[in-house]
Length: 215
Image 1 (tube, rainbow, N blue to C red):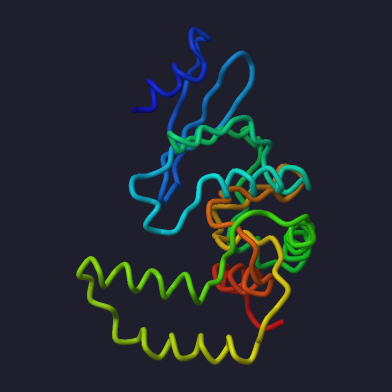
Image 2: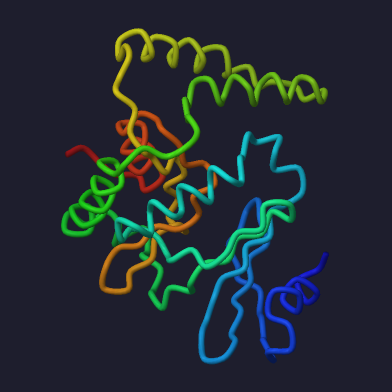
């Protein structure tokens, strides 16, 4: 179903207008304006199940993020279609260079801690296991695995051994710059990889994606 049909189905005869939002990697996102309110309609991309994405787990994680004031309000979820509707955040993107400022890092860390300390959410996210599953899936589809993978995998295994078992916490696991907005508070969007995991992976993910320097 295309966006026009989806909008008409969700807001029938309401005169809703919509426009695509840029920046999505795996999904199609639209800003919908209707009756003085603005929403984001997220239509799941094709075959995202190959990436291990569980739409119901994403929905539950989004509810938890909204509950603790980290993510946008969830207005609707349509599991069969893979659609998620959230309140549009009237905020600004946070540029990468701003993300590297100590004050911004403190603000982001406080928001992440709020989510990490929240009640459990469905699903697990083990970065080592996820990457291994991606490798197996890629090989099954005839993709040649890069030669550097073996060394990276060995390093990951060593980290797993040294870290040992850690108490799982709710984690976002995809802290790309595009997933941060500032409306006076730091907000995080796009919870499709969220699950119970290692909070230190979340922090490392944030650091690598924003090229943080030494502390």
